[in-house]
Amino acid sequence: MSKIKQKSEFNIIAAERLLNESLFAPSVHCSYYSCYQLLKYTINYFFEVDYSTQSQKIASSKQNSHQYVFNYVVNELKGLASYEDCKSFKRLFKQLKLYRTQSDYENIEVDSVKGHQAFDVAKEIRAYITKNFHV
Image 1: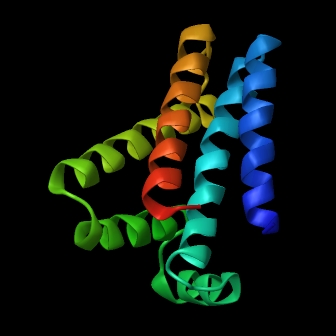
Image 2: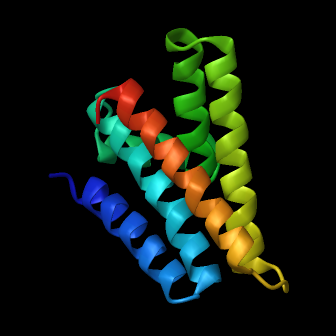
């Protein structure tokens, strides 16, 4: 198994465990990274772009790695999925990224509601990726 995919699996498990321990902010962080890592794996597995090439393309793109990975998958989805699926995927990932940004960088409380919302969005994204990219 790919180390990136394994990290993705670890992060979704960690997110759930952290929720169960009422550690909501780190749970949001893990929920987000479980999806980001799964997207990187998808680019490698489904689109056959190895991790080294991904890193090179990120470095030359002038985008941060998260934006590059997200944009890559969204651009590919445009040719593979319906408009509504693509729109839904973009909305969900942006929502999860917002939760992660708030959780990691803003001086706000991340409560049970936000923690569970992020986890639920992550599970939905992961299910979509798994179903449509066969990862």
